[in-house]
Image (cartoon, rainbow, N blue to C red; front, top):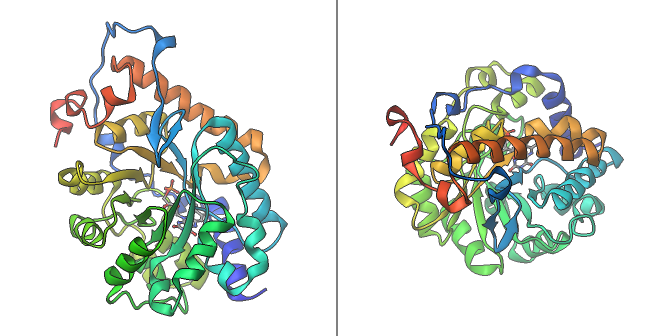
Length: 341
Ligand SMILES: Cc1cc2nc3c(=O)[nH]c(=O)nc-3n(C[C@H](O)[C@H](O)[C@H](O)COP(=O)(O)O)c2cc1C
């Protein structure tokens, strides 16, 4: 198997087998919420629905980009995730589709609309590929194969530095991103992969015509560590905790709340974490690592994990006396004083 095809399998194996790949340091544990002993709500009437990419989600959950590629194992993971997304009424993104450009036969593993006819699906490509000659027509093919509602362009400069043979020319990328945002019919979402977006990144994105951002902060899955393990490169261990935590990135995003939609990810590990992110201005929350083992097993196993997130999210919303998503969203009053920003 060629390097790019094998790489996708390595990533899955390392996330499944190295417990330290998950850094457990999103900063969300330090965020404290208020509590309503008299919420003045009926638990059964609490409405957890929200809107993302012009779709209604049953609660603000997004299956973050993970995989797709060669072989039955990766196709099965994506099928389980897509079927679970449909059953639960949540959004789903696929892993990088660069492999499709070199190995068109892998397109099958990304053709997920048949399993998830009604929920938002998001295509994915590394933004740095725009400096490597990828054309708009090729990008349109990536979107079409899953009939996607949006395109993630992921920004992963640290991963590319540690990855042997990584693509490291990030110069002039904002202009390339602007060309894509202008040239395709669905929204571009700029996304990190676990080091967070800064205010400067968001500014550049906005100027490039992008108004959706996935913060993908530090504290969950560490790509520097994954590539360090693959390449046996100590530099990757040195940088395994580099970047802005999800909470730090949410703070950097705060001034841009009325100009853009933000997705919170990177170490979101519970429904309570999700509620905290929505209170800090996220329109949805992405989860990757915690779904992977279940995704190797079955659709039902993935549904079980998502339903657990949902119960905790619903319970926390009830205990905060918030009847709707709107009552939570960007409502700093629900943070205890010391957690406010
Ligand atoms: C197995 C695996 C593969 C991933 N592959 C991609 C990818 O191809 N493209 C991408 O943008 N992010 C990728 N990610 C990053 C996630 O989408 C997410 O941003 C990151 O893992 C942080 O979320 P987490 O802490 O919940 O895992 C991958 C994550 C995992 C666990």
